[in-house]
Amino acid sequence: MTPKPRDVALVGAGYWGKNLARTFRDLGVLHTLCDRSPDILRQYEAGYEGILRSESFEAVLDDPAIAKVAIAAPAAAHAALARRALEAGKDVYVEKPLCLSVSEGEQLCEVAARCSRVLMVGHLLQYHPCVSALVALVRAGDLGELRHISSNRLNLGIFRTHENALWSLAPHDVSVILRLAGDVVPSRVRCVGAACVSPPIADMATVTMRFESGLRAKIDVSWLSPWKEQRLVVAGTDGLAVFDDTLPWPEKLKIYRGHVQRDASGNPVAHRGPGECIAVEPREPLLAECEHFLEACGSRAPPLTDGHEGLRVLRVLAAADESLKGDGAEQALAAGPASFFAHPSAVVDSRAQVGPGTKIWHFTQVMEGAQVGPGCILGQNVVVSPGVAVGANVKIQNNVSLYTGLTVEDDAFLGPSCVFTNVSNPRSQVVRRSLYEETRVRRGATIGANATIVCGTTLGRYCFVAAGAVVTRDIPDYALVVGNPARQRGWMSRHGQRLDFGAAAEAVCPESGLRYRLVETASGPQVTCLDLPEESPLPEKLRVGRTAYREFKQGARSGDT
Image (cartoon, rainbow, N blue to C red; front, side, top):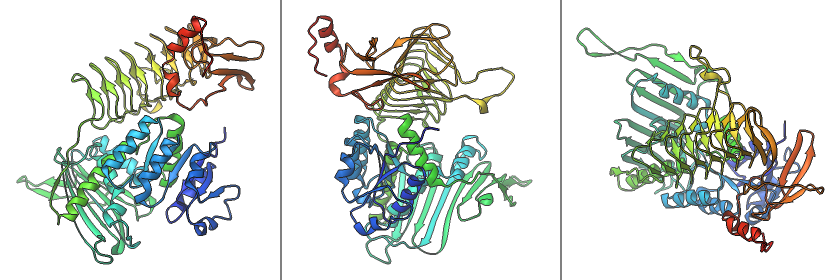
């Protein structure tokens, strides 16, 4: 197995940061611990040998060995730190909340999209195996139509003096409730609370939410409770589900089916039973969350709790905070205009994630659970199935169906009517939904018109699949493949120009002037770009390459790259 690069810097190594430090260290990716307090940094001795310590955030931003920044500093510093890291070309993980204002959250999402960087929020509860199982129960209809969700997060301490209990404790619960509700914000929010320890900082708060669908939700948070409670109750027309994180793993998630029955007169009668324990494989949520961040950085697919998910949570928290300051006055919460364009004939499920600036054209369907990144173009008659992840700046031409099991990374081009599959041996009479095979289209790859990609294959970065080719095996980075079955016939540059490697095994793209090298490896020939890392976006001056190409064809190319 290829070792993961040690390229993560943790900014803020104090109270919660120590848990992130431990997890990233155990994953073998921690490069630098950064904190303004030398006393905190001195606490990291045994087990952290070889990991750099720094009191300078600027040094983290300037270090080319650091590609990812995890921020666990105080919430008031999140916006400034995250923005600077994104603009420095780093992928960013931010502990909850994303920041402390909606406007700051919108700016962070815009910066992440502009810089083609991953922005992820640490809504830890979303990565708890029991929450994943609960979401699956709701999506499968096991509870019927959702009616009410209640969440209690109570404990004694830790007392905060810079943020109230609403901002400190409720983001996790708001995040999960919005996911259960279909990734939509409520239409009305009300919040009441009390400040007992350090007025005016509220030590306890109760939030109520009303959704357009008729769903109601309530959150109780407090750090003044003599007992610890972390319980989520989801009530539907056909059943109740209870997630109690204080119980042992076998008992954490239960479902109560048929909790309301009718007597002979039709009156509702409570049906009390022991409940059915839902088997969930134990796994540390923080480990799953950190692994998800690393995977999103590698695949360039939007993470589950990306900046837009964090922004939805911010909208609810901000409305609740306004209500709290106004003695519980109900706040109207507009869903806001969509940040993407969808033609009136397109169908975009409310539980799909679509990034800003994306355009979705005639008769295209983006299904529940699909993820489409920012700046994409989906042509006519495109289908994006549940679980498909599409990165940023992907162009999908007409009549393309993306099936479950497919991941498409940033800057890929999918030509008209190209075909993907997700089962090697389909039979109409045999259900193989649990056997979908994974296919990955790596960053910058091009697939020509009417090409077929057989499932279980990986198309390398910036490879080029000719029109009508049938791909049955993995394709190396920058490779040109043609025919049926597809066979390699050369190498292509990032700009889609043939590379002519001479005796020195180096070639120059005639359109951009970027230099490439061909080397022999144990797994076969491999091409790398000498001027740009494979994961970096093209500089702005190389995005419009035709001018340089025309100059080359005219014999007047300046050579300035």
